[in-house]
Image 1 (cartoon, rainbow, N blue to C red):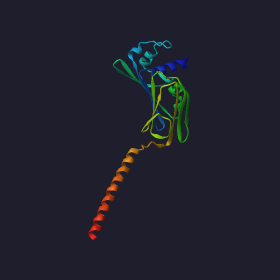
Image 2: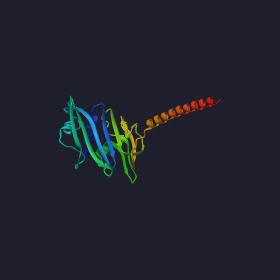
Image 3: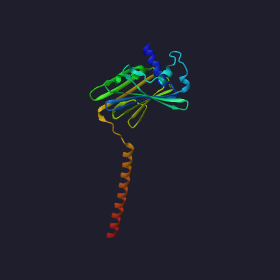
Image 4: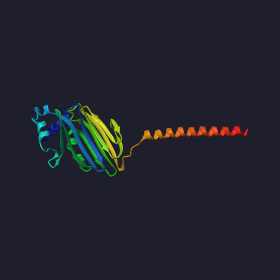
Length: 217
């Protein structure tokens, strides 16, 4: 019964609006988990047939323990017209991130591996928290990423879009190396400019040589 209620509560977290965001920031040994979304004020007055007033209690209670009785997510609410934006956040370290309630509740398979040189997150199988049309999973890392299967990558942020009941997320970082931006565009521009300058200098050299040869005749 307790697990069922937790599932329903996480369902509420992810059900509203067209999309919801789960953000995870890897900052060396610290993992900062954040869930953001929106719920309309009308929904706060509706009763869920399986868990009456769940939405109201989630938004209105001062604190709500998500991970366990000792770990309480930080909650921030912001009213925007007829909607209420919410943000729940909690910080873990690499040794206890496998205890994340969202990870354990929403994903059928969750494998968190912490070894000497690398840290691996693998989530797969049934996804039990698809209460929004799309759920964006964003992972940002200041450590070097060894491998991933993200749908979208921008700098050091990796994004997966969950829009069905099954999912497959793989993300591995090297704990010994920091993230470095690969400025391919800048490198290409530098090579093009260098080539143009070389061609101009070659042309000038040829013209000077030809002029000197004509003067010697």
